[in-house]
Length: 369
Ligand SMILES: Cc1ncc(COP(=O)(O)O)c(C=O)c1O
Image 1 (cartoon, rainbow, N blue to C red):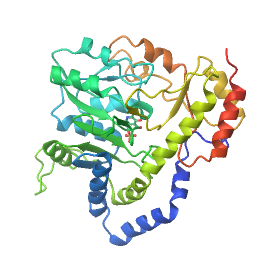
Image 2 (image 1 turned 180 degrees about the vertical axis):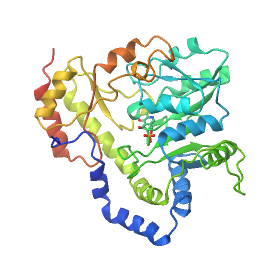
Image 3 (image 1 turned 180 degrees about the horizontal axis):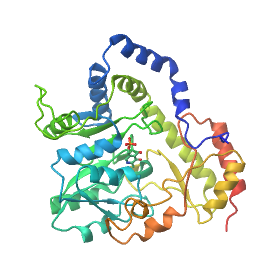
Image 4 (image 1 turned 30 degrees about the vertical axis):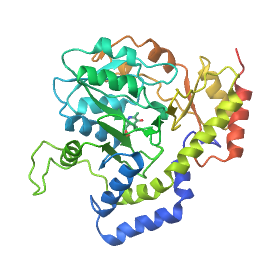
């Protein structure tokens, strides 16, 4: 049964801006140009300006954005890339798509992002890059990660799939490494109504390499200079994303306001609540609480009409496709939090009344141990 208040509801983001989106789609249909044309070019310029980089390259998905960015930095077969197991499987899949070997390390329990102290012990002669994931919309500890990368000659591709609008001391996610990789999956902070992704970077050569790789490795004469893929954003999605980008700053503010209401009302109720590290601006793609009593809380909320989700139930290193096959550091925090995390409803279209209903349901359902 669909809960009265869903955990995520991208249909509401269409309804919030329906007239503008309908007009944008109609404009593309009338133009007769559907792939990598004016809308994509304008979207790339507008996204780069919003994120704060010189370039943005639109691609087919967030997974492709990570894989193409890694390949464009020269990473491939025989190289190791350090990331986390507590992430969407896409992060690890993308590293393997680039031909490299993922090495998985633990997360910091206060931010749920990569623990910089766990990176140095796994660096070996084949380590070439780090993919920090700004999970749930909280920026990873990029100062420490940047220091490690500089000292050890490693590249950084940020997995910013969940972090449109996250920032560290005023610098947005997507500007904090060699390249940033964004997803426009419909539920994301900036969501298309289909698949999409983008790479942001200040490096002109890296941007040019990404542009080639996304379309068969073609140069301007349509001759393949590299072994590329087909990972193009279409004009309809670009036109939709241009509309939604205009509302993104307000949407992130609203996400943060909802999160602040949750934090204020749930403090002291016995759940572990999300934190914001000093200097960090959490973009609150997800509002994730933790409790060892998750199954009971989740079932009670469902009965009260509040939808929840778990991001993610099984860490990547224990998923059948990956188990026993990847190099892993000790993953004690990852193992523990996988059994405790629960994502509450969070999207800009939630009304204050609905937020109050969620809070009341959580307080009624969760009896402090
Ligand atoms: C952390 C993270 N990385 C990568 C991705 C991959 O993005 P996409 O689904 O657009 O390929 C996602 C989204 O699903 C994600 O949440």
